[in-house]
Length: 84
Image 1 (cartoon, helix red, strand yellow):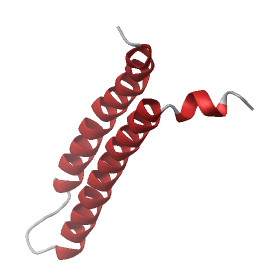
Image 2: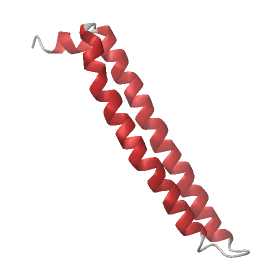
Image 3: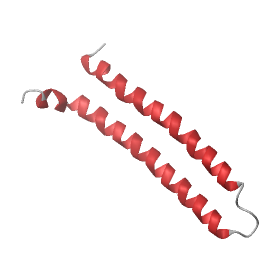
């Protein structure tokens, strides 16, 4: 196992854990709020749509941060910073 492979395990596990917690939480919240939306209440529908878009953006941001972290590990930036 390469030295960088061990360093990649923790970020992947943390990201998976956060996503496994956050995505169902957003889904359950949307279902609960969806029950409040009656026929013709476009205000609640707009809130639901906004909540879904923001939750999706957070999930995408978490995955993007993971990919950036993995690139940093591959490029060796971590070892360079430890010299100072």
